[in-house]
Length: 133
Image (cartoon, rainbow, N blue to C red):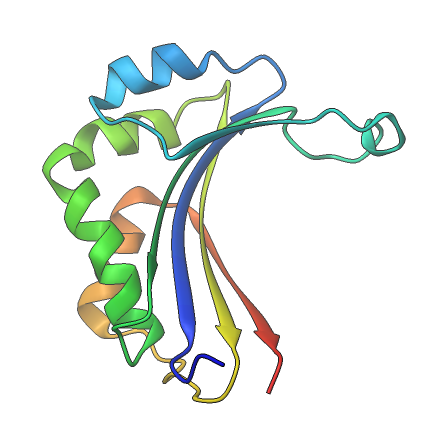
């Protein structure tokens, strides 16, 4: 059984009529996956029907902030393009950190520099924790 927590850091861009290829071209980054809503019983929920997702998973970081910084490092060179997408009225952009605990727990901190960079984009950030210890 793994000891270290798994921390996933994710940027998601979603809309009901999102063109993932256009987002890829605009950002100059390939997504790790494209998610599409396919479950009829979830159609009524206020969830974007198509999501462009860039996710980094790590077991080598001891804090949520360090793991999120890995994603920010990838995005920072294209930060203005990400902000342009984030401020678009036609899509929604957000960050998610997901922690999966099997034994060890990370530090649930965000360093001031991490917060400052997240604030540059003006997006939501959420934290999901799954504790299987």
